[in-house]
Image 1 (cartoon, rainbow, N blue to C red):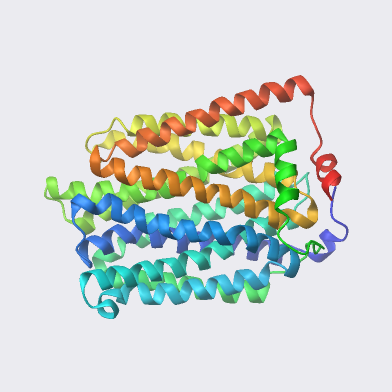
Image 2: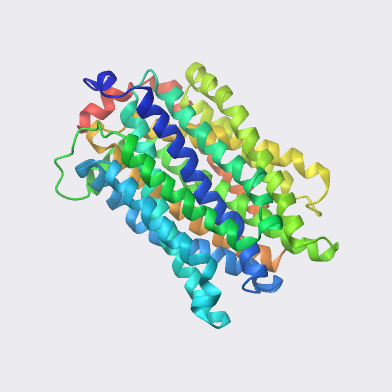
Amino acid sequence: MRPQGQDSEIGDRERNALYLLSALCMVFMTLVVAIQPLFLRNILGISFDTAGAVNANVQVVTEVLDMFIFGYLGYLSDRIGRVKIIVAGFLVAAAGAVIAPFSPWIGGGALGALAVYYASRIMMSLGSGAVWPQLSAVAGDFSHEGNRARLMSNTAFMMAFGVTLVYAVLMQIPRHVGIVVTMLLTAATALAGAWLARSFLTDIAPRTRESSVPWRVVWTLVKSEPRLRLAFASSLFARSDMVFVGLFLMLWFIYFADLINVGQTEAAARAGLLIGLMGGMVMLSIPVWRSFIERFGRVQAVTLGMLLSALGFLLLGLVVNPFDWYIVFPILLISAGQAGSFVAPQILTIDYSPRDLIGSVLGMFNVIGCLGIIFFVQIGGFLFDMIGPPAPFLFAGLGNLLITVYALKVRRAEKADGPVRPVDVADDFA
């Protein structure tokens, strides 16, 4: 069911703004995570013995706070529109990005500097956490069932482009101009995003009449629709995967460099190229996944995507030296799987959401994703310190395999019960 007047209200200007904002948001979020191990190691002096736990704790603290705001901001965007929240989020993120590189000077001692850095990361995470879920909601607003796979795939392509740009290009900058200057690029990126959203993005979603966050409505919707349950379960596991790889692969390279007499900025650049390759593979595979989704369906895409990711993580967990060339193969498998695991669950979520509650349902979807990041990153940090760098990847691979099995179960039930049109489900709750 196409929203009335949608085609007359949006055009290439709005869609292109959405695509560019998706890339800018991902550049900001990825650069913050990528530069963190280098900053903590070289500026704040965090040792190898506690590197996994400290880096994981920073990520977990920010995700816990995000978890508490995602649901409310999703509902608020249904009430007042997405654009205001996106602009405010970029501005808060920019403020945190300005503070972060100067945390040693603001905090004074080692503990004070780390506390200031935590606070700045919280600001950046709260800001970016207000932005990217709303960009997904805007993509849902701009689309209908017939063109949703194409528009969501284009948005995901630009997000993957942002990730690739960070690791392939921007993470080469620290060895030339320093860590602090590179970190300040995140602030410039966020300010550019705020200006672009305010100038070119348009709200077209119908406003909800709900007077508070409709938790019960969303829960009933998820409980009654197995495809939504699969999308939410995929979010629990898959949303953490990109953060997981970026954080622990960068950590692995930086701290392994001490064992083979490689400079740490050089190691970070090497890891950046590898993760940039991962982003490039995601970009190249997204058009293939779009065709796959349109031809075979959303559930099949989730199943295959999670399976490829699981195989890649398990193979990566068998690597001893990250500088060996054959690490490329599992990285390519993970990235190919991630493209399907990222796009298809979001499409499923929007497919089965009432039009005036897309923000609220996506808010709950992202809360589940935060829980996944908290769980996997925290456990992964302990595994990194206690067992070794490959251990977190084996752990993630087992999690992805569990979702693959569940997706196969949903697919069998879908074949037995017959197809259910998304508009029919959404209309029941509208």
